[in-house]
Image (tube, rainbow, N blue to C red; front, side):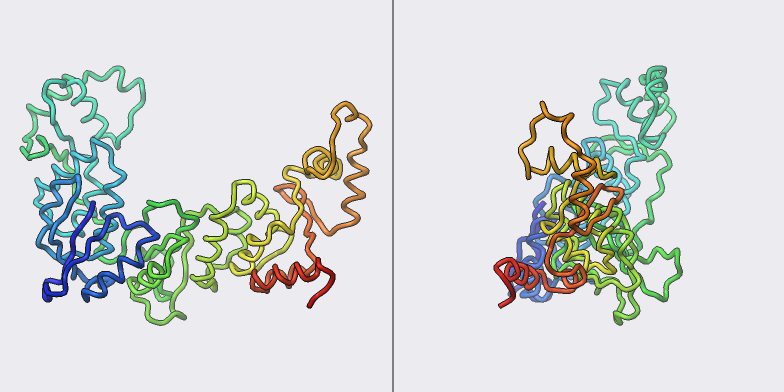
Length: 398
């Protein structure tokens, strides 16, 4: 969808056209556009919707109202994932309940799937099956559906319940209660774009099981991080702690991170670095973390940016397997399968291991081959570390 937003108190400032959901790469620019209109507050509803161009006619009720930017963005992300059935369920229930607040509309996205909407009375068998699924959490066994009389189920629904006619079909709420997952401040965790890790911002004053969590999805833009911190309401950084949500990091990275003392911006740098890696390099990073023993996100980031300094034999857990990998797959040698029985893989593996500092990990064998110590590598700025490596390889530091 696309919204034209303005400042209701100062229409002379002009308007800003914002795409929703806001692409991560455009987020900061959109905030800048709204700032020039003196709107776009992190928590207040100060953006007047002049027009809303979307595939969701029911949202036209927002035209002329004031909305909060991040709430509208979140709603757009939720709706963007809906299928055809949910499209009708959301719109019909929004009209039936006459919802106009962003809080209610967001909460509706978490429960509208319980409702049944009939848009075609000519196929009652399909209506009955859909109704059965709606009232059973959206799932049923193949055996259940095979023995279900869909037409009879639909007739019982129509004759035994009062439906509400809407522009989006006849809707039966099936006893649905409007969800209260969104409290008006803490948007529920929800993955939309591909992210590496979901991090919750929590006040240290909150109990362990608190639901007052502000979620940020990394990597994120600087503006997204700053607004998430502001939205959390935590003023003193010393009062903030992190909660780890879903993570796409290698397990070794998750274990190494200490969320009691990590820096959110360093976590973001790590997410950006790991997000650029291939699947194979992510596995290699897990092994590199095992051998290097980093203690924070910043150090892990240095490893991710310098993986070319590590020799890695995935799946190798014995000297023989390591030797076989080095001869067959490393690309260092021309391997002749006709001579396979003459290769002494174990001996070669042991010989190679004696000449380097490596170890076997759950991922395979890994050895660090850089000229700096691992401590120096993890402590340095990546550009400076790379330059020092080049200086060493050219014959010494300049």
